[in-house]
Length: 513
Image (tube, rainbow, N blue to C red; front, side):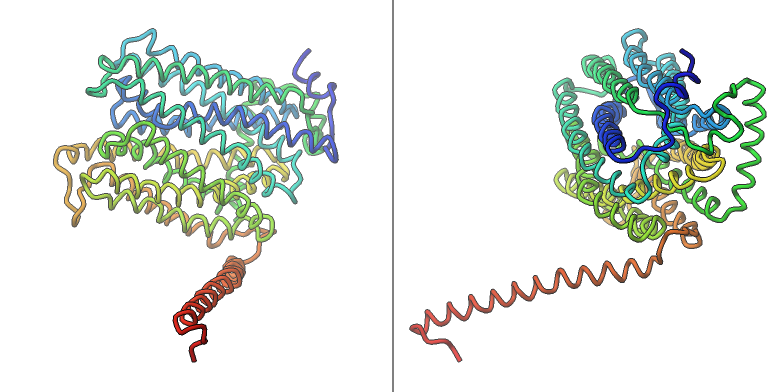
């Protein structure tokens, strides 16, 4: 059966409501319970160590971070196919499955090739292919979910989905870190010495591929949503020919130019590009600094970066969801962005030779980052799903992703160039007061500056359904005052009563005047 027949003749639906909607929402959450295992096993300290043991330089880590953003251009092709055919479900399933299964090939790289430039190049090619497949599947999933999940509950649903899946992530990353520590042999971190560690990471990647594929396959039993905008012009009967795709790319280029006349799109897209730059310019270098310079163990690094941030995100997820549903996306983006500006400060003030303080400041920084990044992620998904409701829906989604990708790609190259260019600071650190800074600290500074610069795009970004930022902050302060002050005064009053009773007992039962 062809893709068109599968999408338009097997259980199509204009919308889901009631029991079918609740069933679909549960399935999306259950699927991500498998997906979060995949995500946790291909990231963290294992990914950084895998690259180093294969032979990555600092510049290679920058290119590695840039690849996923360069692959975003594939979203343009996917958006044209969606617009011309109306197909989404099986585009997502086929290409996402291919992406997840390619991690089996990545796991086989150190088993088939000796660590060195050939192994690095092979890994980069496979990883880039997987990234392209991931981005081909992304517009289909985003617009599919945008049609399926009602706007009024999106913030709360995404928050609850995160609440259910983050505990799984925490368990997986801790177990992975413990396994990696057990597989590490005392000595230098080179492939010749750490072959057991390298093969253990390959096994983790293979397990991740299996769980990731299960995540995607669980969507097979969900109904395709055939929305009216995608049916205009009999999209369901049109084929995505090569000539049609080429013409469509020209249309997308025109749509991107036209979209930049829209203040909402322009401000959001440039905000996304700046934040992507900020994320990637620091990216892998937080991990490298912790593992190679601060003396973190693999379990310790996974705990600090992936558990503390995830736990803080878990605690804040429902609050962010309620704030988004009540106040809108823009005020939440402003508040969360202000928070992430200051999150990396702890990494700049860790004194040399203090292992305990290094862990403590790392925990605080990652907890702050996780709490505020979760607000940004939830609000950004809300904005993207809002674009998914407009005409030219998938083109808008893809265009926003491509603009953000330009920032991420530039951030990866800039981060690699900065770390490689200042590599001499590894041998002779720069003394900044009582602290010693190496090349990676300048990546952290660049990330903080970019995060602060992103605020300028939010200040003038319209959000038709949002209330004013100052009103939200006034309400937050009012609620905090009403919740904290009564408890504080109750505590003081209880302490005063206890003191009076104690004095009365000392005075023979008479209350002091």
